[in-house]
Image (cartoon, rainbow, N blue to C red; front, side, top):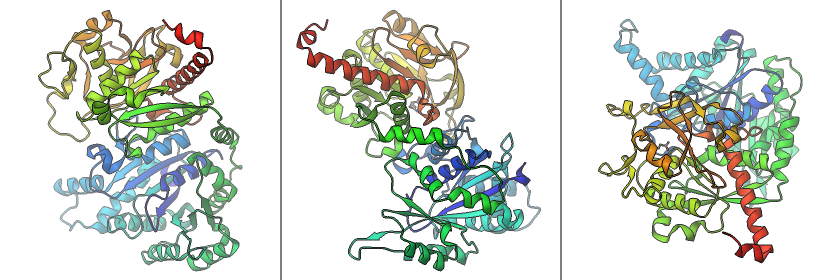
Length: 553
Ligand code: GLN
């Protein structure tokens, strides 16, 4: 199918963090809603083979695909916007490109030639673009985001490759979109176009003439400003797209639509298709903007100063908020602080507690204390991956009476390793790509809270972990009242736990946040936020009827 596909390349200029990922996702959504089959792809110019070995402080969240690739968090935006599961082909790094080229060289695949950036590295990059178009079923449009900012040394091979690519597939099949910043200078009370002119010049100097400019701006672009950008950057005025700052990323496609972006894309690529059906999306965005009620949920992690480390969880809360008609306010709680100041100091008054995934022992005791607080105070709780693991440790210590219980990740000599290394992980020596990764089936126990939330008994969820619940402790945990509500189909791996009798207490070994979509909130997040809403309403009732408040238990 690759031959018939159309290709859109999105570059970024002036500064990073302009929202290229959201821009690509928004274009993808508009084209999808016009009936086209869209795939998105991201090129990352760093030398790591994948972000799996990078610290979240460096990189933000690692997004895991169904096929077990550890990828850039932009893939999360892609999947959430176009609602299509992407594969490892959708994230390509310089590290992967060089790994492939060097391996081929070692195998003698270049027949004695000198191996060079042009043409060998650029050929490998172009091959990856074509591969994206061969993604199983038919693909009409591939949207490729070039990471980094124009002018970065490390991005040059990618820009050279996409320049060449257009010659190969023909100009009618290929489009360059450039995302840029038009800053407002307060002292001059003016929007400035010079940075945009410069970054387009830089692209021109390597042979790429952008066809469409998307301009991030705080203020509306006047007719004059648009004209000036068009003149200096060699595009038509309507090809200058205003991308004004908006409170919700989900509004961006609607703004692009208003600006006629998808019409221009279709025209230029010769795609005959009806206007997009954005009705459902518009209603979702309206809901986000019209919430009157809110709940507060504590996010108890260790990367809380870098919200990007929990990107998909934050988005999942938005989706679950839409589903429940409430705005979710996240209270970022650093679990190291809980260790010194106690759980009460940070969690009193919240309507829900979430303990996310993580690695390493920093802040672990604080996480355990947060779980205990949620369990004892009947606050709705969701533990994800490490969050499930600390919930099991907490229960083992404080309910089963197994003093010193821990995960062997944090205490190799614990007398009760209730969480232990998975069997196939014991002999591993390499770090990259060696966890239990990607989609695995989970069988849910009938009649459990998980069953009520999912509404089905068989689900597939994505994983990224090395440790698991130690089966030697399953009976002890169950006898003390911890229900195992989901397992691998052979029953060997614990995938979900819950506490019957608690309003909502769930732990899952997988990452539900990776599969939540704006119009299809993940059942576990929907459940947590729904329970948080009830928790808040009940507390309000108690306060308004003092007699009832005293009558509790
Ligand atoms: N560190 C834990 C493990 O490897 C949890 C991982 C996670 O939360 N993603 O099992």
